[in-house]
Amino acid sequence: MKQIQCATLDGFDAKVVDVEVSFVRALPSFAIVGLAQTSIQESRERIKSALSAIDFKFPPQKVTVNLSPSDLRKEGSHFDLPIALLIALQKTKADFRDFMAFGELGLDGRLKDTSTLFAIILSLAKEDLLKKIIIPHESLEKITKIPGLEIYPVSNLEEAITLFTTPHEKTAVHSSETLQYPHLSIGKTNYYFSEQFPLDFHEVKGQESAKRASLIAACGMHNILFEGSPGCGKSMSAKRLPYILPPMSLDEILEKAKLDALEGKEPDFTPQREFRSPHHTATKASLFGGGSRSAKVGEVSLANNGVLFFDEIPHFPKTILESLREPLEDHHLLISRVNTKIRYQTKFLFIAAMNPCPCGNLLSRTKECRCSEVEIARYKKRLSSPLLDRIDLYIQMGEVSPQDAPSVSSAEMFAVVKRVFVRQKERGQSELNGKLSDREIQKYCITDEESRTLLESAVPRFDLSQRAINKALKVARTIADIEESEVIRKSHMLEALQYRMH
Image 1 (cartoon, rainbow, N blue to C red):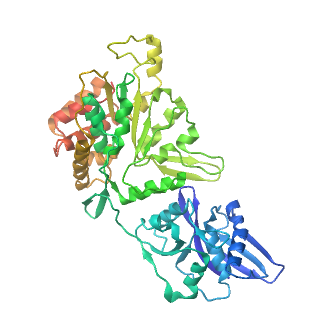
Image 2 (tube, rainbow, N blue to C red):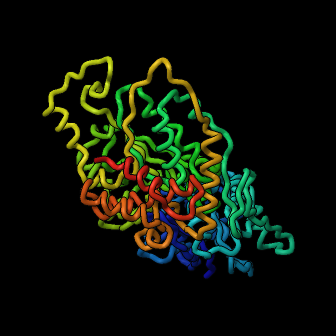
Image 3 (cartoon, one colour):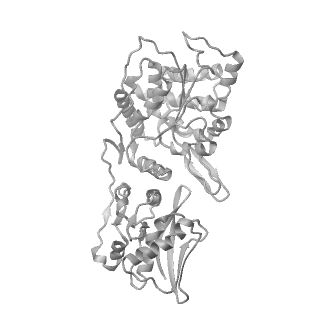
């Protein structure tokens, strides 16, 4: 019996699978066992055709392929290559130790890339479970972005067989640990960024307070809520925020690429943070992930390390808004199904936008509001206090006037974000200010006596919860970083408290 390793996705992570083949003298047959799903069962015909294309005579025996462990569901056409290799090399002394093989076979023996291949290999690499991998040549460009791999790319089944029949001709490709983008080097880690701003804050006229709040939100990855009349620039500001967010580490870029692959998109490996903007009619399953048998990734999880934008947030169903509280607070989401439990990371910047009333004219200087006090109260109550408590920055935007002019550009704002990012990392923070834990708040959010007194007096006056106190401290820490202050001073705390929704 011969054996080689492959892997399958189990929810969000990959699990190693041992592929075993036995040949028994009996009526000729070809069976695959071990909870193999349809895509693997269909591989029998692809493998037979691919082997015949290289003039290999399929053995007239009972061929049994076992995928171990047998209680793990396996999916994916990438099992074609390891099974074909074991059958083709049954009579040789090929050494498959330390090798993992992945690839879908065409009927002519050509090897093809699969949509889940990158996600599987990245997951295995993070757990240090890979040594040498055989992959289709067309997968090479994206797989080489994963550092620390010894890769053997092959174009067809014949080349894969040659790797084991003529070992001296093996030539490995070693993956790179750098990307061709501008970067900051802090310690031993590179943080990459893009200097392209297709949507620029220079296009937003006026709204200086909103731009200031956007800068603070970007510097510390703080959640922000824009409130204002229709057309005042809420969505404009939200859509420009992703381009000034902090630089990304290679791990974050690869994680984004993994989410792209799981969603069925081709990974681009750019240091541009994800921007997800679901419509308020989206289902709960599409937002948080779901599925009857196995959980699928949703918008909330796809926004990890990026931005999740809820436009017209009061129109989202109450169940969705309340379900958002856990990912906003704990930065993870647990999806439980009968067959599986999956934990997704949800460390995103949450942006919300809303009108001041149902008709939108409550703050207008020129239009009359048509809403009654009861309608306005009902509209506001759609956002519960626990949800609003998880918002770091609340900004009320006025109407645009003809006198408003452009001011700061995205390039200028991003220069500040980079400077503040370096301060946070050099201080030893693993997380940015907006995502600090309670213990980290005590360590990094150092206040002077005046700012501490101000915060203590604000607690009873504004009825601040402990969460709101922590939010104010984290926002004040970011403002202090922008002002290049080591400690949080009174002016920083005063500005942070002004952004609380009272």
